[in-house]
Amino acid sequence: CWNASLAEMCAGDWPPMVVLAAIEVRFDPVDPDVWPDDPPPVIASSKWHRSAVVAAFAASLPVLVPSLELQLPQLPDSICPSEAAFFLGWVALLGVNVVVESGRGSGGSTAFWCKSPHWTQLSVFSIDREHREESADAVADCNKASLVEADAFQVLRPLLKSLSHQRVGLFLDGPKGRVAVKLALQMMVEFPHVVLVGLHDVHRLSPYYQSRGLHKTRSALEEAGCLSYFSDEDWFVKAWADLDRYWDLDGQAESLGSYSQTLGVCLSPTEAVDKQA
Image (cartoon, rainbow, N blue to C red; front, top):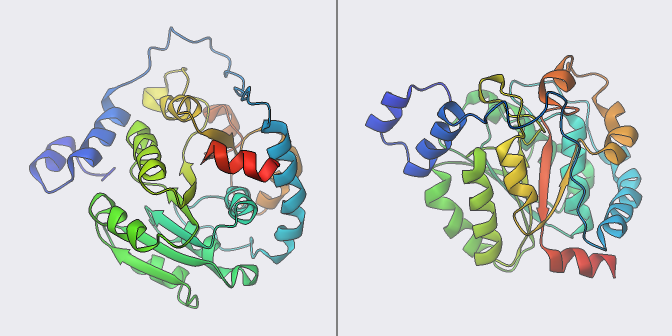
């Protein structure tokens, strides 16, 4: 989608929501004069239980990290190891037993979800419009992953409905933009068993023609009404950035205003309160 011209997309069979997401990314830049040149600070949630939820997450992650095979080959467009650990930490804390992924690409994230021996009970469904051989190779020895070649806007709801007796973590790396935030919230409302949603590419600065404003997807997620946490928050970066020591992330902090491309998660407030209690 991202390599297609707008004319090709509108003339082809791309779903309207995908076209809207691409239009937003390419043709809806943030006004660079609205925000100062310095990267905006992380906006901390004012929820009273935020610090307790973070503490519970931080306490669980050291137990999980030794069992994660985080030194996987770096695949194009993949999330980095610290982002994988960030998402899987919430998966463990919230008792998720099925991950549904939309936007597989080369299969890097799919490999993270399914290859670690710790996650023997975690099932993975990975949806993408285009099947790539490298994605199949990335999970060739993983019998927990089901690769679905389809349009997520057509198959996501039926799939989530079929998983109604599971605890589902939804990972969106396509669609992008505020369309992805809207889709995430819709799925959490329609399917209460979706207790966690992760969205990739929610760093602090807007990528729209290098304008120096807040990333609008991140702002939408922060204001969405769920509890949002980000992999570029200081408490996480200071403790877990070393997981990426073998990966090439040079120069990202300056251009993105964040440690990396950044993974954001959205938790149901009820789920977070229950875990804090």
